[in-house]
Amino acid sequence: MKIFFKPELTRCMAELLKHIYNTSFFDTYSDALSEVIPSFDKGAFLTYFNTAHWASLELKQRMAFLAHATDKILPEEYNEKVKTILQIIDALRKRGVRDQNLEYIFLADIITEHGLNNLKTSLFAIEHITQFVSFEFAGRIFIIRYPKEMMQQMLRWASHKNENVRRYASEGCRPRLPWGLQLKQFITDPSPIIPILEILAEDPSDYVRKSVANNLNDISKDHARVVINFISKWLGKNEKTDKMLRQAARTMLKSGHPEVLSLFGNHQHIQFELNNFFISTNTLRIGDDLTFGFTLRNADSHLAAFRVEYMIHYMKANGQHSRKIFKIADKALAENEKVTFSKRHRFADLTTRKHYRGLHRLAVVINGKEEQSFDLNLN
Image 1 (cartoon, rainbow, N blue to C red):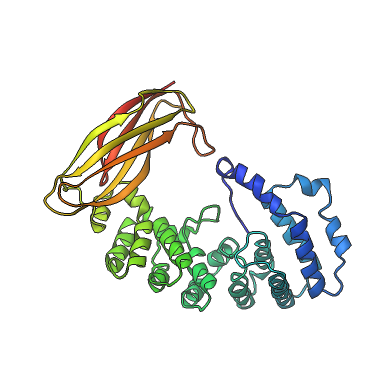
Image 2: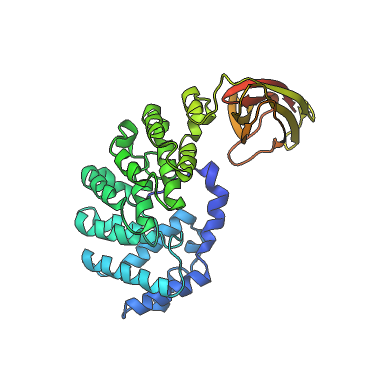
């Protein structure tokens, strides 16, 4: 599994997640191995992990270590190796291990390690293993090696009876999968993905539709027109698909793309008023909370949809500003109807953002356009 962690985003999470490999995990896993592999020496296997070296490993390293340790006790012949892995999965399920867990995702790495030259068997393995642990990371190298064959198979998997396989058909070919190897051919040309997403646009599973939204959102970063055309075709089919399409358009909506906003009824020509704006302070220290609020009135002559957001113009280390937008609400208001919003924003350092002293700015954003704004001094 080639997961490319961003250290500044995932250090704390990985530190916690590495402890999923605890005594309970090893008891369950070694019992399953004992059932499937008659020659398995549980004591010898566990000694691999009762060392200072294992204790020093981080999450990704522990997964790689487990893949290697497991591979050593599996049959050498690839077909038999796959067969044994599937038997291990069955044994784990009997012991109460649920599908789509994180702990056993290292099993997919073994397929990537040995199966690149045996596509037929690997496709069989991927279809069955991804029902137990997602193959979205490990499978990307197969798409790079066999783009035509893999995308043909993904198209077939999009109609699979198992929702985890259908989800993989979308998630596995996301161009910009977080922590995963980028599929640069689809960043350049996403057209092979679209037929798969067409099949899955009205999938009955929320889990699958969320993946479709994420895939489309990836595509929108490089090919906005492709996603706009997709939304235009499917919008209004049913409520669940509409929700998925809004999620798919989230990056374009946050950027204030007028055409996309209009597709969802958030027209920039709608008349409105902002009143009663209040802000708790204009001077803050790093770590402080800012409270602000305002009243929005629909000043148009008909029911209107409003996408209500706020934007912080953050001071960067180089003295420039970077913008970050935050959603408040999607709200439909009748003529002259009012609604009051109150928000709290914390200016505390996070793993994803460091604050710098200086002039910041807070702006209310209505249907993609910056409206009333206030300067903030962060000391």
